Length: 117
Image 1 (cartoon, rainbow, N blue to C red):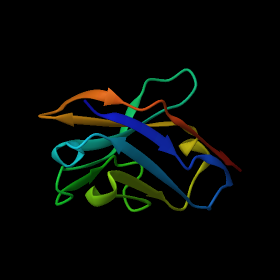
Image 2: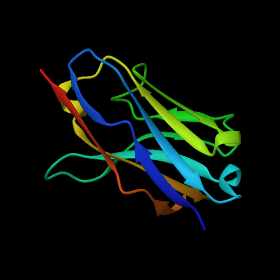
Image 3: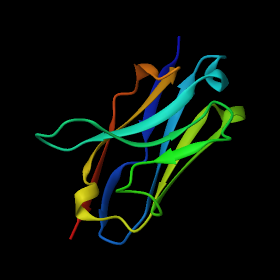
Image 4: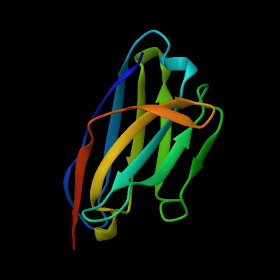
């Protein structure tokens, strides 16, 4: 069982930066792959970035590649999403999810990111 809590969202101007955190409970956190998703109003939830359980592999949606960086600190049971060069279209609720073998069944409650133009 893993419980996830996102934080770090807020209001930022276009071109600015934010760092989201996904803090997990449970002693098995380091065995889970983690993904970030986002959902804008009236739109489907979409994949943003992912990291393997060890942190050795990372992958990104094309829309954020080169601007966002995902990382993890298993000693702190935390995954981070550093978001730079933010655009208004990045405005969404951001969720982290934990899973294995592409099945992501643990989700956080989300954190709002709003980018003003």
